[in-house]
Amino acid sequence: MSWYAWSICALLACALSAGAQSAGDSPLEALRAAIEQAREAQVDALAPTSFEAALREYEVAMRDAERGRNPERIRKRVDAGMALLDKADAAARSARQVLSGVIRTRDEALSAQAPRYAPEEWARAAAKFRDAMLQIERNNIQNAQRRAAEAEVLLRQVELTAIKTATLDEARALIAQAEAARVERVAPRSLNAARRYLARAEQEIQRNRYDLSVPEELAAQASYEARHALEIARVIERVSRNKDAGLEALILEWEAPVKDIAAEMNVPARFDQGLLVPLGEMLEYARQQRQELVRLRQELEDRNGQIEALNAEVQRLESRLGGVSEERLALQRRVIAQERLRANVAAVESAFTSTEARVYRQGDDVV
Image (cartoon, rainbow, N blue to C red; front, side, top):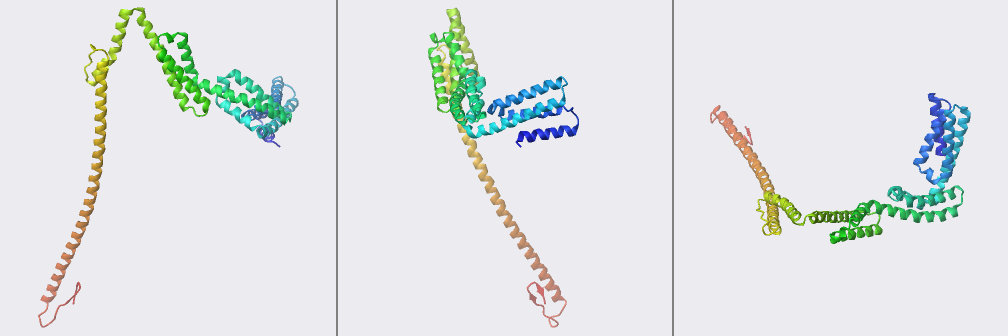
């Protein structure tokens, strides 16, 4: 018994034991759950004929239940659907064994969202893939392999198309917008830069479609250059409407943020010699500040090293002082003990005359 049959039997048993549904609803729910499990396992794609037939049995059974038809008739539909799912499962297992390569290629195309980014190409590739799976259901392995090879070529191509579209679409659209606005007349260098970045990004994807870090950076740069070209064209068009007043307004507009930045840097901004002079002074100030930052960081690092060295020296001295203190206490204890012993000897000697006894010391004992 396949896992579909087992799962349906288990679902039927649970439904019957619960007694919460009618005789017609419980088998239908079991079949619906089995169909969903089959979809999750991609059986609908690997064994389309049997799966679609099982789905039709379920739909007919649903209509019969809604019309209040005989529960036994509904159960027969469910049994037929279960048998078809069992057949679809067997065909899907065979497809995974015989056509694993094209199935993996299809999965990769789906991961690249080919149905979204290349719907027409995907439709052709999916149709060819379906043809291969139909041959598997008919147990025609040779035809299945031939059509799978054709499908794999289409799936590889649609995957590549989807990856390119997802990565390059924004840059392509911006370049097309710039071309439609005839930006090349006034901003040819920026627009050509966008085209070059886009071409390089496409080449990188062609070289390795699964490592998109470089293509994504190039595509982002292409988008920027295209937007830059559009902005240049917009400014030139605005100035061209009123060449005299418009140009002065544009220059003053450019000077304003430079003046604000110079004020934050405490650098005087004078534009009587153009923008380059204050910009050069600001650049020099920024370089000096950067050098000062490097110096301060080095000084901080040096001081941290000195602090660590001093802390180590303090710990060493504390350890030495601790040892000296213990030695001094031990010596003091010995001196006190000697003084007590001498006092004891003197007390004993004073208790006798010189002819009555002699007092001796053996270590710390008095004899």
